[in-house]
Length: 328
Image 1 (spheres, rainbow, N blue to C red):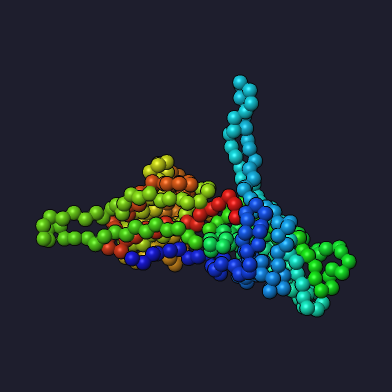
Image 2 (image 1 turned 30 degrees about the vertical axis):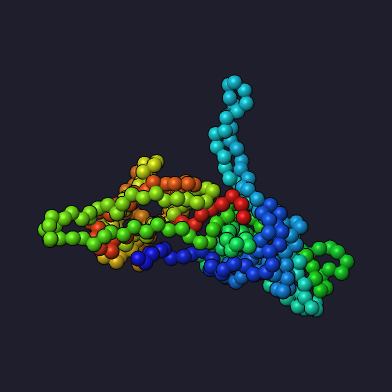
């Protein structure tokens, strides 16, 4: 049966980066590309492009750094109370060249603009990060959102700046975890309802789509997106392992829509929290505050229960998430 998914707001899936795999410190052989805020793709390990990565000097691709909060232990030492993941800094040296001075300058300016564009405010008053993507020889990929910090000053070396130069770029990452661009999904759909007396007494559930186990294959917590397709009069999603849950009433006073009709959809995002009807209306007021918890998926197996009151043929719940990893 078809999968129902939320609108994609991540950078375009451009496929595996081109170029020859190069040895990158901390992770081994890989190819890389950069996707700027406009969606333009810049290969970083393809010599034929006119620029390429200087693998010696790349850093910041390894495990996440943490700040530890501890409490003194009365018997000596300390106990770990909290570990806070810290923003990541990546150093990425590029060598840029041209067949003549103007071709070199054109490439240098274009690349610099592609990275510095991440610092510009958009019409919404926000800055849009670029995306650094690392691909392994087996085709698997991991991405991280980056902001330009510095590095396009060039090298102060004799002969540089005429036909070629090196830029040692520093990139800053709000979220230090790497993300798999290929989403994982779970789909549950109500079966066809049967006549109670034809051909003999039959009961079809109009409430529970089912219990299932959702596996988070990544290294850290992920915050999924839910897409619910009607009919439904009440939507309840529970993590039966932790007891956390949230319920959405489409006929709540703050919404007043009435039951979710056949084919109508509502999208619930857990990070940042938002609830949107298919026409863009804000339905966050329909959640069962203050007890609602828009919970995440811990690494490993997560027992989950989907329940739609007033469900019927076509009722469905789709959970979608992108795994997050410690390293590229």
